[in-house]
Image (cartoon, rainbow, N blue to C red; front, side, top):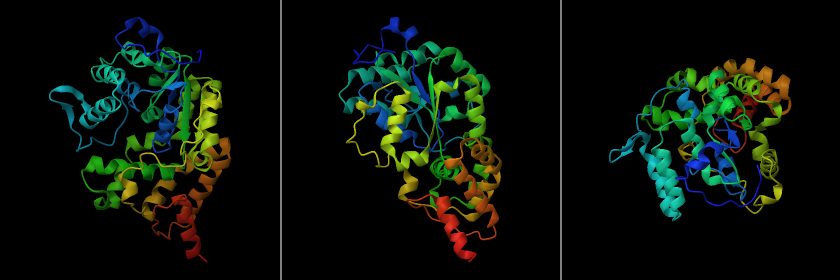
Length: 345
């Protein structure tokens, strides 16, 4: 795709629908830095990303296992857009008003009135013009072979970005974010058993199954179209991490806004405001579950994946010391292991 500044094409121009569509998809995993990536890619002058981070188109066509419905969700506004989350409607339309952007408002109306067809989905990227475009929907990591095959047929040249993080940390972070919405309870009132029940459900399990995701997506797309990143690299070297992603998308790094605060947390969520410790019982259960996956990942990637495996093995070796550990600026699993090592001296 040629790169340059682009005219703001109207979404009413159906002539562009058949030739539109994303140039890249970030498929997750959840709680691995995708919101951070969305923000900073959106700042790049040669990249266009929709006002909605997660379009959830393909997982709508090819439904995924879930852990239940969010009891706090209300849908529609005054009878309009009844299938959409009310909070999302207000956020997206409010953003267009805040930006005084008729183009964003037109996009929002088309998105919320969408008929769920491939043509409608592709048309959502019409405003990109000649800029690189993409979307970041973390649930795409859990798509089936059939769902990914559909994407391959529809978007054979699309580039895939997949971010990974220690799966034990990822699962706990995701549970802290979602379980209050699923249960309708404050985070502090959710029991260990409720967390264990949630974490053992098919929905959370499939979203953290990195080997499955890699197998399905890499079977459908050539390696040159797949970029795998690690949350640890994002945290330690955000500038070089972002540069690598931008270059993978075929853009020169000089478009990056070096002055941007790349180390600031983006959308830390309610769990960050009210930290909840991970019980050792949960750490042990997650370690047991993810051990085979981590052995595979360590064999393939080494580096961070090997560190994850060692942390997992230490948790299992010291599972009799079920001490709790609090959220910290360092890896919570590493913090847990340091507590366990002190206990065994």
